[in-house]
Amino acid sequence: MEKIEFKFDTQLLIEGEGLDEDKINEYIKTNIEGDSLLAVGDDELIKIHYHTNTPWRVLEYCATLGEIYDVVVENMQRQAEGLQG
Image 1 (cartoon, rainbow, N blue to C red):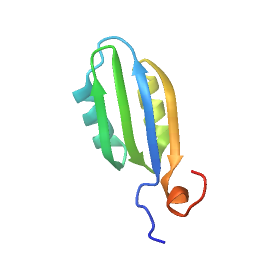
Image 2 (cartoon, rainbow, N blue to C red; image 1 turned 30 degrees about the horizontal axis):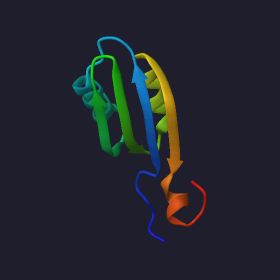
Image 3 (cartoon, rainbow, N blue to C red; image 1 turned 90 degrees about the horizontal axis):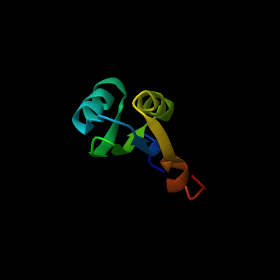
Image 4 (cartoon, rainbow, N blue to C red; image 1 turned 45 degrees about the vertical axis):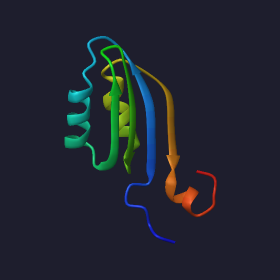
């Protein structure tokens, strides 16, 4: 089985005021190693999707921006091996 470089699929919503998807995107890309980043929305709600080995860093950062919810962290390596992720 091929090893996945960034094994945690991390997804969440951020609700707040004055959110800037470009700044969030840049911060995550610069400070948290991973790939497949998606940070989209408007100034009150942003959807995050990111593959990383340190999902807690994504959660910690996003929690500083507003209220986070609908948090999902799935282990894609386990899923690829036919196990529950």
